[in-house]
Image (cartoon, rainbow, N blue to C red; front, side, top):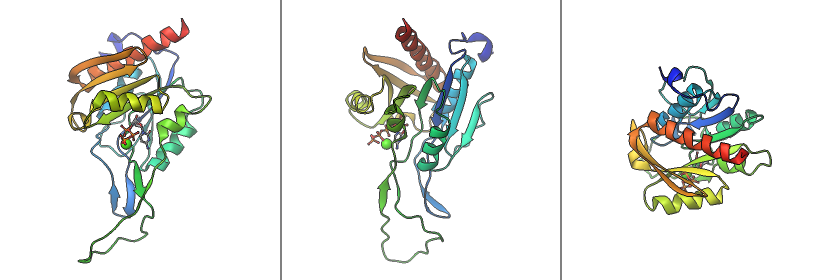
Length: 222
Ligand code: CTP
Ligand code: CA
């Protein structure tokens, strides 16, 4: 039904999407992660396929079925996600960075399980690469779309992120209302201003976002 009712606005377009959280190993049985379910990224992938796009999905660990028709590459850490993105960037028209990439990783993952003691434990973290900023800075960058998960000052912080990363478009949401939920809401920010997408299922939001991207690409060509 989905496939037959969507206009094929992305026919002939290649789209790379990241989704889900990343896991940053502390030791063989523990990691640092976040509450991302992958639902938003997978909804975008599924909807983009229905709209005719050739989709490559780079996914962190999630418990969702692979979207039918996408090439899905599973990764665990931010470093692996960056490598998979760079390996698959050639020829992409659009990059949508939906993944909730861990900002930090343990500076050293312990080779063996850390044993407990009553003393406090300090884990030193180091910064992960910013995958989206890395891609957007390339001279051969595709059309880059970011997400901004914020807990306050949504529009200001999201717009600052969009400018800092040199993105034509960013989709902003309140993290606590989006992470893991079936429904969410988004505000799209571009050079023309802000475009709210009302609260609804992530599949509906995905469609709204993709229609907006299609319009922007159309205007670029005109
Ligand atoms: N992102 C990324 N690589 C990272 C961190 C973030 O590609 N290491 C991408 C996300 O996929 C998203 C955008 O950058 O599209 C913004 O992510 P967000 O976590 O909201 O912002 P940060 O730039 O990481 O800043 P902060 O977490 O401090 O708000
Ligand atoms: Ca972050």
